[in-house]
Structure formats: structure tokens, C-alpha cells
Image (cartoon, rainbow, N blue to C red; front, side, top):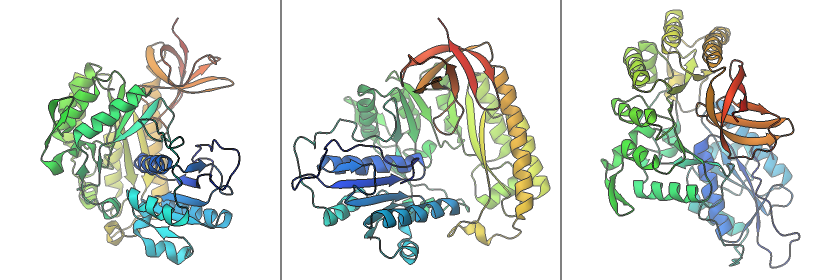
Length: 455
């Protein structure tokens, strides 16, 4: 199993007896939403008495939770399935790529079963056919939070499944369907359990966080005996009372997002928004079928910064989309200079099987895509480096992620795990993961900071 994706929930038993529980190997690929799906499957399996093993060789069956968003993710998923088959022989496939069962069986005809995304019960049922559960009332006792694949101090809180958008480059709706929002009472109950069990940071995720509740017409649910609407504003208000960091991901720049900016200014939720802008050219956005307009977005960004000057804005962009001209690309660079986004990722466009963008005319040459990508990243690195330089000498709050021989590795409020920068605290080996402290910034590069604790 890949060391990056292996599930390291170790088997407490030393040997395998006749009455020992079945052992499950698990590989989780893809985005944080897939991670949450994996956690739910593992929680159910542990509740039924199964052990989770970190090696192929010790497993009675291996589950591979796949990603199918882009071609490189499909290749990684198929390669991982092949590795599991070679090393173990008994493999159940689930996740987004599972929606294309024929494609999987064409490459790997010997997999035992294939299910689609968020098919938790079906996955567990398939495990039962290979390794019948041996219920044990002692090993089946689970913490309130279930099995978590993240460190104890942070957790992903998934508020919905699916998406109502039909972006031409994206095939997620074909895997996960239209938007289905979780009842807000259920979401808040999960958040409260996580906090009670030591979570210091909640990362709110979905396919479209700002559309939360649209499918239910913002139905009223109940939380602690009070009526609460299933809507992003109310969700932020309630999460903001739990006394932990709350970070919002996958937020489209709809007008009602303005309602949560004052909460950020008041430090009720983190001043951080992850917004997938994707491009700035009107013609490219139209070809993508994206619900945004660059000029309106810039006006909104300026308004947000007036209310909350410390807000961190993260986004992702696609360069070299079919039909993108040099003029379109220059609009994107101009947008970057004007928007001054804090954290940015970019991808070169590539065709995805099943995405309608593949049929668009005027695909951009690979060499041109690479050249534009390099120019884009140069612009963003310059912006990021300048922004981080302004932090030198300032006091900021950080959360510790890990402690290594050289010191502690932390993140600021401006940094989400795995995708943003880090704050390095040299020689601070006495700290523990989850510690939150104030530090003074000493140095910076394009992405990361170096700091020391404020005594």
C-alpha cells in the first residue's frame, strides 16, 4: 500500500485465532470528501468487530476507495487496485471511479465487487460475503466520533453530497448526483461530538458549501431544542459557538456569502474562504459553465476585505482550457494582480472521460499550456511571497500538526492542512499536536513561515 494513503489503524491483537475478527485492509485515495466516506465505512466495520490492518499481507480482504475526478486520479486508482490484487488477491472497489464498473473490470476483471461513491452499506455488505462478521462486544465499542483518518486535533465535517452545477470539465455530478444536504441538527451533533473528543479545528467540506440547504428549501431542523434553518449562515453561527477553529471550504462566491464575513471579522469562524474561481475570462467561464463574473467577484473581494482585513482567500484555477486565447489568459493574470489572493493552486487542463469539455473546439497545445502554467505560477509566487513578507515581526496564532526532531510543524489560521503553507517552529520539541499558541514570525518564503513562540 502507498505510504501516503494507507490506513494506519493498527490491529490490537497479536495473533489470528479461530475466533479472531476479520482483518480489513483499506486504501483511501482522493479528496477530503472521500476521506470522510472512508471514515464512515471504517467506523461501521469496526462497530461490527472487524480489525483494520496496515498491510496487504495480513488482510482477509482489501477495500480501495477510489477517485475518478481527473485522468491522473483514475490512473492512480487503477494502479492501486492492481497493487492490492497482486499483494492480496481479494479486493473490493468503491468510490467515484466505482461508478464506472465496466472500466475497472476491463483492466481488473478479478476484483470481488465494485460499488459507487458513498455506498457505505453496500461496501459493508460485500465485506460480509468475504469475511462474515464476528461480533465482539468489547472490540465493537467505538468512540463517539467513530474511526477518523485525520489527526485527532482536526476533522473534516461533510455537510452535503452531490452538486447542482454542471461544469463542463467536471464529472462529479455523474458520480455523486445532485445536491443532498444533511440535516443541520445532524451536522451540529457530529461537530459537537468531535469537539468533545478533542478536535480543535473543523474543516467544513462539500461539493458546494454555499448551496447548503438549497435542495431542502432551507428546511428548519432542531438543535439543542431550538429551531435552526439548514443554511450556511445558520451553520456558521452555530459552529462558531463551539469554541474551535472553523474553516470553510468549497464556497462559491454567491451574494449570501457576504453574510458570514462579519462572523470572520468577529473571530467566530476563521477568516478563511476556499473559493474555486477556476478562471477570470468571461468567454472561458462561459465555456466552463461556471456561475461567476470576474468584475463582480473583484467587487465582492474588495467588500469582504473592508469588513475583515485579515481574511485569507484561497482558490484554484485551470489554465489552457479549450478555446483559451492569449487574451483570455492575460485577463486571468490581470485578475490575479487585482485580486491578490493569498493561497492559489493551478492545474493544466486535461480531458476527462465523460466530461463535455472534451468535445469543445480549439484545444490548447500542450507546450502552450505548460508555458501559461509556468507564467501563472510565477505571478502567484510573487504575490504570495510579498504577502508573507508583511507577516515578519507580527504575532499570529498557530496550531501544531506534528513534532519532529528539529521542532514543531504548525499552521496559521491562513493555512488549511495539506494544501496550504506551514509555520516551522525550530527546537520546539516540547509542543504537542493540537497545541494552539501565539508566535512571532521571523522569516518567510513563497509559501511558508518560520517563527518562535511568544513568551
